[in-house]
Length: 220
Image (cartoon, rainbow, N blue to C red):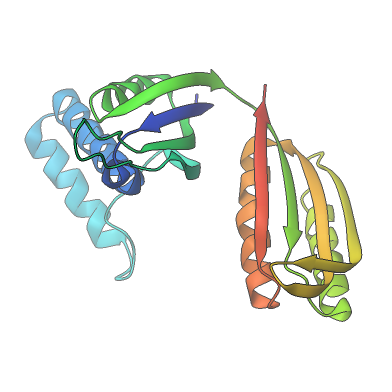
C-alpha cells in the first residue's frame, strides 16, 4: 500500500537540486528493474516486457513508475554562495520540499538515494492532508471573476470532501501591476490538493492571470 511522505531537504549544490526529480526517477526505475530480475527468470521477464511493449500504442511511454510518484517539489535558495579571496568561501544552501507517493519498500530506496546524493534530510514524515493558498496576478475584473467561478466549479466536481474559500480582491497592486486578484484556500486530501494546484496554475496561465503565489502546507 502506497503512502505519502514529506521531506524537508537541504543541499549545497544547485546542480544536485535541479536534477533531483530526474535522477530520483532513474534511481527508482533501476531499483525496480533489479528487484524484477531477482524475482523472475530472465527469459520470462524479457518475454513479458516484449508482450507489454507490443500492446502499447506508438506514443506510449516505455516506463511505468508504478506506485512511485513525485507529487510536489519546491526549492528556494536560503543562502547564496559567498566568495572570499583570503579564506574559505561560504557555500550556497538550497532548501527543497519534496512530497512523494510510494510503497514502504520504495521509501527505503528513496531514503538511501537521498543519503548518498548530497542532501541533508531535516525532516521526514507521513502526510495525508494539505492546505493550498494561492493568488493570481492582478488582472481585469472579468478575468479574475471568471477564474474564480471556474475554480469553484472544478472543486465542486471533485467529491473528495474538499473545503474551499474563494474570493476576488479588487484594486490589488502587485509587482507594479494593478487590478483584481483571484485568491483562495483549499484544504483536503494531499494528493488531490496537489493535483488541483497544478490545474489551477495552468488555468491561471491560460487566462493571463499567472498564479505566482501557490504555497502548500502538509499535515497528517
